[in-house]
Length: 252
Image 1 (cartoon, one colour):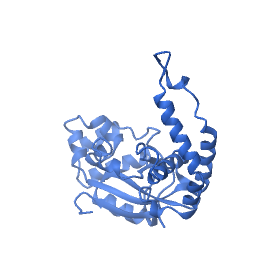
Image 2 (spheres, helix red, strand yellow):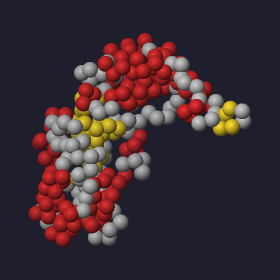
Image 3 (tube, one colour):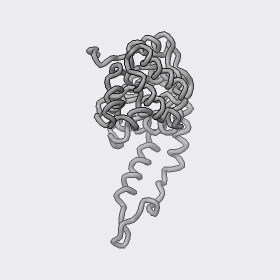
Image 4 (spheres, helix red, strand yellow):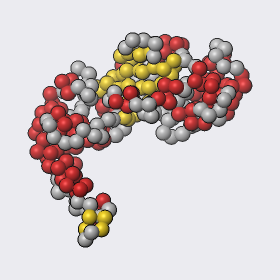
């Protein structure tokens, strides 16, 4: 079964078993964090976080995190990749899956738009000459969000839906009357729903933390904040792992 982070009924039994066994430590850690957060003065002066007491459950909580991470073995997680795509790009992803981006791939996508008449040569050359496809936070990484709340936030993923090419272009072109208008007219907003192997997540420690927090909330404890999770993988996502591509025009 595919694990949906927001639906605990889809969580594997082995993971739930580990969390139930660790509930005392998880609760103790969160209660201590709350106490330390509010214990913010000493001798009438504000006390910086670095000078406050160390959480006495810290070491136990770190151990629980490692146990939870080990329980992720063999688990597949439902992820959402937010972007703007042409119909051709949708068809290619359905047939071939998702490939981690690179400057060469990015340039090829822009040239494809010119070849099919979507943008003219002047716009294509400007986009190729001025972009951030080489940035380390983008190249070689396929990003996903694993909870639905960011999908509904205007300032969360809204720019990915409004601008073709993602941050690599809109960071530099969204205020430009020519290139900005051009990338906003290409394609349609899409959500790619994919199965992502937890073994390939780049920050499994953070994932374990979010899982623990969500478990506590389901048990009537903890704080219903900091429950969203986003991460990237470096390997291609094969077509078999693409579960659905939702278009803005669909009633999904």
